[in-house]
Image (cartoon, rainbow, N blue to C red; front, side, top):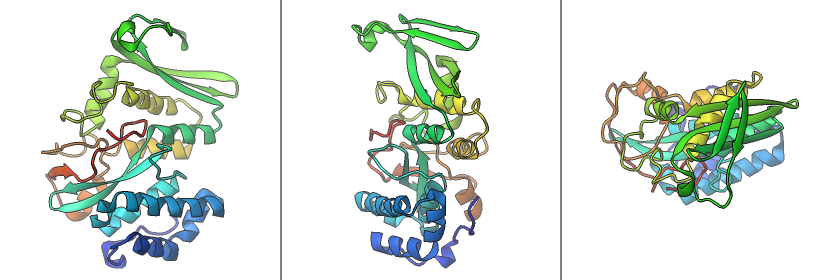
Length: 285
């Protein structure tokens, strides 16, 4: 847990530039950030990466200071870097009602990073297609793919699985298409929108499927607080919130605390200010 209360709007000065953000984080949270990463060099790299992320997407500076700071502190708490290259985690700006709000989002690679830290020797995830040779027996996955065939030639996607090797033992999780899509419908507010990454046309490698089974695999691994916290954050918005209207894009909006603090019962997300939200593998749509 954070060792210091998250800031309120009244305690944060107006942040108009990346330098303002850097000064505030250095003055108020540098000690915590160093503690989260356990290494001063990596903490300094995180600070530099935050600056780069804001400079690349200046619309973040139009977000409420509380949401902006909290999003980056959440990322630091998990020991992840803001990077379009690594695909570990992101902070994206959204317009909710008449206010811009920054939103932390886990990336596919972020879960992989946390798994390795938890002692998982190997992690892999893949999609199963109709013409593949695939069996699942007593929790053991066997999957043969003809490398000469394209995805189209392999047939429609019918499921996905993730495998982790822990202390030499294989732990696997398989989900069929119906169960995966049901998870998307439940947890992703972008699921039914035109630009959702849940559509294969927008996500031909089906990274959202892989991210889904990776998250479920995490629940089967030996208890690890960082992994459970990451899964909880990624699932924050589910049936607890009312259906939002006018959502253009962006999955897994973690708006619970913001809405509660600001008294909104029926939020309206009119547009995503970022060009496009990233897919699970970290690529911009």
